[in-house]
Each structure stands twice: as structure tokens, then as C-alpha cells.
View 1 (cartoon, helix red, strand yellow):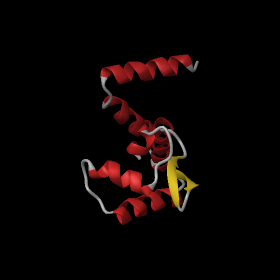
View 2 (cartoon, helix red, strand yellow):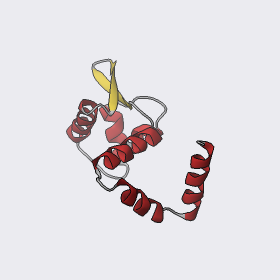
View 3 (tube, helix red, strand yellow):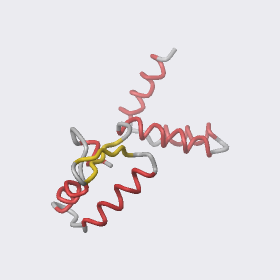
View 4 (tube, one colour):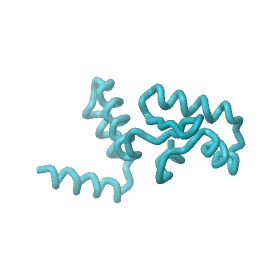
Length: 106
């Protein structure tokens, strides 16, 4: 997903494989399988490019992270405790940013 978020536009499985091969060689079928699974989960859109498909994220990285955090919080019975533990682990700069965001919401 990170690779797709960093790109300007959609990538074909061959392009994904080519980029991955620079650091983590993978088979073409592996790249294709991962893209298909992400598409079926609704995380990617796909576009016809010749005989192949090209894939792009449905949402940006920040929105995806926020959706994941919301999903986790929905599953927790003690939300206040979970939020408190999360905030405890934030760096001071992240904590300051969170305070700024919360203050702006008032």
C-alpha cells in the first residue's frame, strides 16, 4: 500500500513487481495476488490498461490510518483506557499536535 500511496497514478502488477524487485524480489503472480486481494477488500480501485489492470488506493494513507483506528476503537469495551494508553505512547510533538487539533475542534 505504501508504494501505491507514494505514486502519482495507478500501477500495473508488472510495475509493482518491478519496484518491489529492487529490494524484495517477488514473483509476478505474488504481486498480482496481493493487488487482487486488496482490490476485493475495497482498498484499491482498478482501471483497465490494455489487457491488464492498473491499481490505485481508494483513500489516502492518513484516511486509511484513521479508519483503522476507528475500527479498533469500536471493538474495545474500555475506550477511555485504550485512548489513554495510546496517548501515553505518543511522542511529545505528536501529543502537542493532538492537543492543537482538539482545541481547534471546540
